[in-house]
Amino acid sequence: MTHEQRIAALRQFGYSEREAAFLCLAALHGGYFLRRQYCRFLGTGSGRPDDLLVCKVLSLGHGRRHSTGRRTFLYHLCSRTLYNAIGEPDNRNRHPRPPYAIKARLMALDYVLAYPGRHCLNTEHEKVDYFCRVRAIPLEFLPAKVFRAEAVSPPAFRYFVDHFPVFVDTAEDPSIPVVSFCYIDEGVIAAPAFETYLRNYAALFALLGRFRVVHVSTVEDCEERAKAAFRRFFDLPDHPAGRRYGSFLEGLLAFLRLEDRYQTGRLDLLSAAALDELAVLRRMFRGRGYEPFFEFWDEHGDEGIARLFARTDGPEHGLQLRFAAHHMSHDYGFL
Image (cartoon, rainbow, N blue to C red; front, side, top):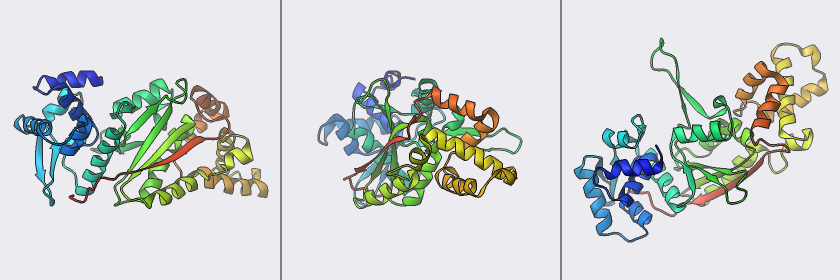
């Protein structure tokens, strides 16, 4: 469904257009919202509009109100009827979450509300469709999680399970959009989780070539730690793949060839210099989410990898990546 179709579906319940538009954002970006967030969406102070919205949500049974420790009411959109209406019958945002997860979802919604008008990929389907259809990236290179319900059932793959906001920005160059990936740091599982996030997205980052990672946090001094982790992960400021091998693609192919010889026991083909080179390449690629490339190369070879990068906007002379930090000034201590 398009955003306009979702709004039209919710308006049939009696919501105004602005109420329906906000509820779509809240439902798709976590399922929880606060009154102040609706006021931010409207650009007004608290009062009658937010009273009307929450009364409708509660009277229609589309959500529940939870009282917190600081006289702050938290609203959870948990109705299957509402999610069915917006084309998300299997969306897990309607299920209750622990406080740290609720905080992450409120932060995500606050971040989206801070940048109205930007093109946001709101759902798993929208993200998969954009990267696979528009950017020509094969499905196996997207961040995924495997769910196995029963031993006899085939595994189910879900993509972008973190549900963090992803924006497509065309302001700099409409012909080559820059994708902004937002990591929401709720302050409970900080640095290791951020590095895991980078690892899960590494293959997609490599094929995009140009991208931005935005670290969103409520702690001001968290920015430097996150930036250090980002630079460590990509070996910035002078990425070894660009310095030693001429391009990211050449460095990746060198790693795949040498690692294959090592893993298959063909050590006679590896000189001492080659082993030293493999050690350097392993620090760059091994265990960092580049495993899909190895499987693809094993089937299609060097030419297949080269064609894969040619089909996308992948890096010709190294990754063109940026790090940004966004500090949330809101207080989520009521959770």
